[in-house]
Image 1 (tube, rainbow, N blue to C red):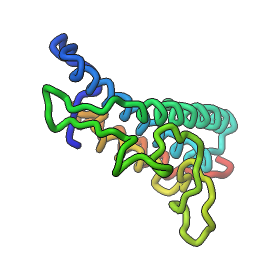
Image 2: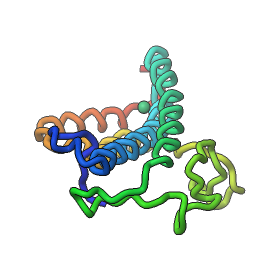
Image 3: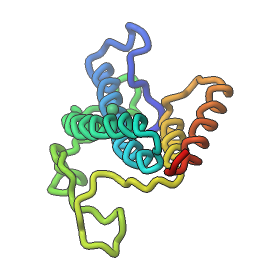
Image 4: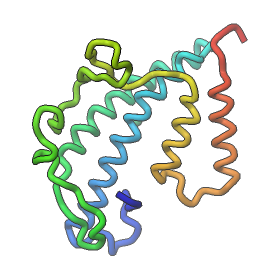
Length: 176
Ligand SMILES: [Fe+2]
């Protein structure tokens, strides 16, 4: 909960052990979350691509994001439970104990699982991530902004980011 560094800012951050471990844990969850987004983003945007070279690039990046997602989910599942000694609001619970743990929260569960998030009308089926294409680029820009990735960037940066996302979301498959 809240904002916490995912990289050490000064040498003071190197001690005590649980403090630098809290920073490493934050980075571990950050990576998994980014890759989760990437695993949606590339299949979503591929559906709007016309140029074969761009399609090849998007289709080539997408699977690597899924591999990153899988790996970082597994790594995050091993995050050592702790409270940051320099920031008591930074708590990593034991993910293998109640209310976590059990089959649904198994921390090394890295394969696609049956889910209802696509449609509750469908029988449970394994889906990696949603791939709806409407607003996918702006959704990614908003998600990355909300998770604090761009803290400190200029207003010109955010303007360019929004312009790029709008252009990507306006793209239509067809002969162009
Ligand atoms: Fe990635």
